[in-house]
Image (cartoon, rainbow, N blue to C red; front, side, top):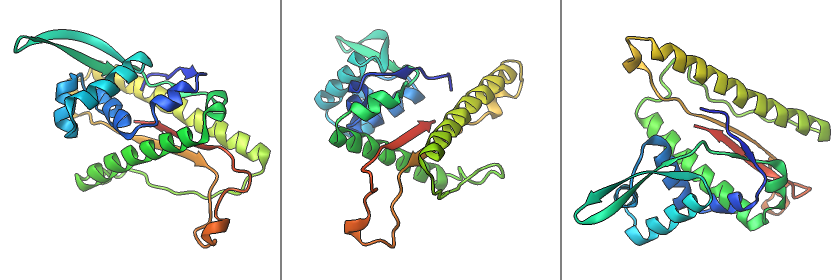
Amino acid sequence: MATAPKIDDPRYVKALSHPLRVRILALLQERTASPRELAEWLDATLGTVSYHVRTLHDSGLIELVRTSQVRGAIAHHYRARVRPRVSDEAWSTAAPIVKQAAVGAALQMVDDYARASAAAGGFDRGEAHLTRTSLRLDSKGWQQAAKACEKLLAELGRVEEAAARRLAYDANAHLASDAAVVVMLFESVRLTQPEADARPRRGGRRRAKSAA
């Protein structure tokens, strides 16, 4: 997990607000693929997938790796770049409906990965972790909690870099496995509240940060 650069353009939030684009980006983080291959995996039309691939490419979130000749046509193969983290400023200036869509798409992708991994025994390791923590914070507490999340992601990046160095010289590198971490910090509602009263009082920021 290389250190992801921060970006200050709210258009990145919009680029990640469509569920199919989020799924395409997730697949291209796993491997290099062409729009036709992506369309087959996602059970979507080639035209729709190609449109979203162009959007991701224009946003700088994926890059063209190579081209190949396939049945008389040129196939373009893409992979994901290091996924940038949207800055607080860019997130705060994005339209609320765009933020809601981006969060919804990210949560759906997290749910897909977590359920599929759990069914395959992904939480069986003794080191696996699953926690939901509720906090009651003032303004300073929110700032400190946000910084704590940033520190955790930075530390995980260092952990992965150290693992990569060990694996480079390890004869048993084939025993390495993929891991996923999801970190979320958001204004919470109480499930015991009436629905009409269940909105965060300040209509504030909902953030989802993930490293996978």
